[in-house]
Image (cartoon, rainbow, N blue to C red; front, side):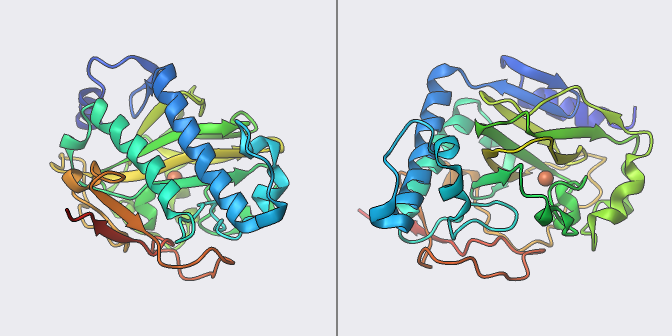
Length: 303
Ligand SMILES: [Fe+2]
């Protein structure tokens, strides 16, 4: 098998965990009701913070599911990028840090940070099932892709938490390619250049269901699959493994993105904060192919 070393690495990550999805390059770790409730509460509060800051007197009352209750207002938020990232801004950075704190605690609870040398700030992402125009872009997440094609290294892992919304209308599909030649383990101009790898790939029988933390190997081709209207909110981020394995052909990251050591990352929301200096305003398009769109500053709390 070409991926024996990757299968072993994935299994090592989730040893002794209760899994809701168990495929060779994709694991869904059961969060448990109490932990998932904390994650829901914190992301819902971050979304409420964005809505109430932006809409002021016209902002909607708080409820348990701001995303599906106020879809149109959510669509109108100015800090949502074309790829759906709800950017932290200085007016709402405090509630973003609370979400980060909960996610950091989840990773720590499952013993994951020790595997990595670098971890990325979390993205809170909202994908719109009704918005098809945006999907024409060459790096739209609705096109089959892997994160290596935007500059992440081979020795990386994607962590994903679907939380709110219609995750069957806005689902994710996964394909394990037969092989992943080193020449494809790098940034590509468009995702289309990677399509030959889909030939003969195995589609996974898996969905993007709330309640689990999905851990996805960097070789697993995936894309957002929209079959109906509605919004979906999830959290995602990348981690880079400390020790590359034989099939990790490219360990150089060409994407410019804030990365922290695991020791720093687990302190977010407690001893450290991400601060976003820009105010909540219209999204300013930039060359995001190699850049994380949030300009974040890390603040260490002194005492
Ligand atoms: Fe992706």
